[in-house]
Image (cartoon, rainbow, N blue to C red; front, side, top):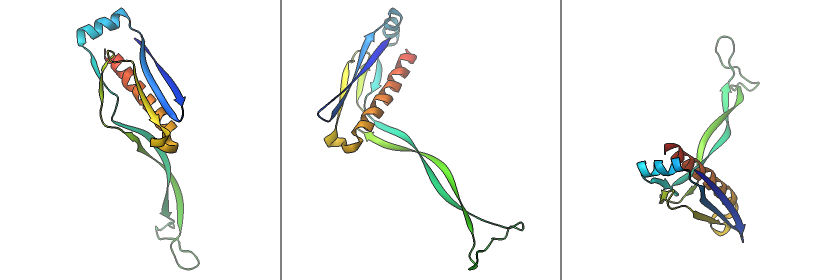
Length: 140
């Protein structure tokens, strides 16, 4: 099975269309045998963010005692530790389509609604839906 994604931007509205281009006989037989799959076109859409967290590590001498500065205060080294977390860019609630029966479908994102994040939100939606569709194809 082959599908394509069509992206369009008009008047600050990003539209993404997912459509079937080709279904092989093998794919059609798999759908016939296993039934239509369910594709969640909603839900939470997250991206991984890596931030450097600064941690202060006490400086100690060979005996394990803190090294003090000229004022008698403990000294520290600052260590940057890359920390990964997920940031939710979009949470639109679950919405389901039969796959591949209910393709094509289009989802639009307005700059009025998502402001300066609209392009990132639209791109994340596309990437996530591609992953979900590819997984369904693999399952069939």
